[in-house]
Length: 202
Image (cartoon, rainbow, N blue to C red):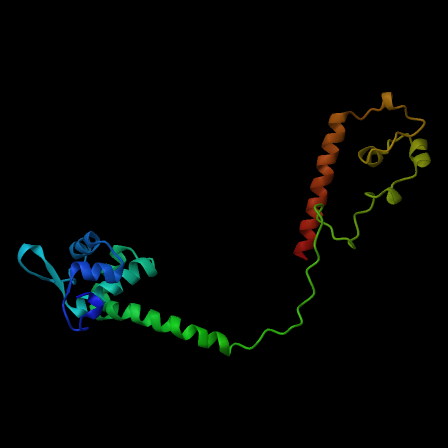
């Protein structure tokens, strides 16, 4: 006769309890050494017979260990402070909660069909398609070549963009080295990142 055919008040062997809880028999024996509240009847040859309360307690311990993530010490503390009856009812209350969840979901009001406008997607540079860039970063904002040549300065931003040097400044005689350009580019990118961070903080 299998455990399912027995009366709820009937005693069960360790093999029947292990099958019912989907646990190896050695785990049940180990739990006996860790939880003194588990006291199956023992007969000749070391055979164990579990009362209905023993089975309910084992189910509660299994639920706390595997379902709730408690440690063995945690379950021992619960048994000591709350008592075996609390542990025996823990897994039953959890099942009742799961069975009532679909009802709670149905009672939730439907989500309106209209959804909020999508959040603008920023480009890799950190600026949106309609966000104004700092002055001096676009070709339209760059200083006039003729004016800069009259003042004797170099169009640094123009060089960063890859523009050709001004006619009156030969490329071979430029005083800005590749290392200077690399540092300026790194500084420019850091400034852009700082502005993006400040804009997000506003």
